[in-house]
Image 1 (cartoon, one colour):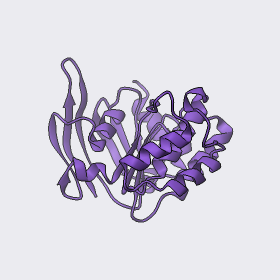
Image 2: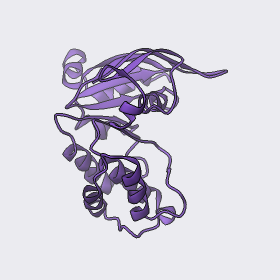
Image 3: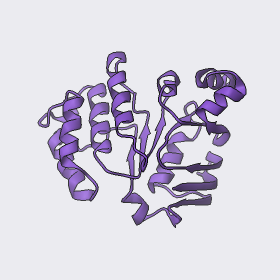
Length: 230
């Protein structure tokens, strides 16, 4: 579905991505793993079409990233991107106008699942509530690829299980879900494929169960081993 070949992203004094090659297939949940500054967010922004790679090739269903891919790829960034005046209802109306695949009924269902009210003003919410609002509006799109950058940020330990279950319940054979998180132990329970990125380079990737069998350790322990000196 998505193919990335030797992606590089350079800024004036920084190389955010040095070499990323990977393929995203439908029906799987992927984990992008790595410490801050490893290139996870930059990679997601390239897939979302928000920035362009300096070098390399990336295609979605054999087409370059552009208008077509943006209509089928949903991206939830780490920062809050709602206008200050918006309630949850306003945000839903905004998404409905922009995205043909936005399901308004599903959005209100997800808000209820996240214990949020349509008329709540987002700027007055706690960080955890904003995180759940972002998740609800992103998952309400019927997209082929759903990217969630640090979806558990600000979510208390009690609410994390509900968030994780909501993500899993939205996984289908036709969709791919890509998640990044520092809470590797939470992701390990649900992922099919792990991509370890270090300083902008994919150092290890593969089927999660195969990686565990080959290395004789959990994904959490692999994370500790790979990034121990970072």
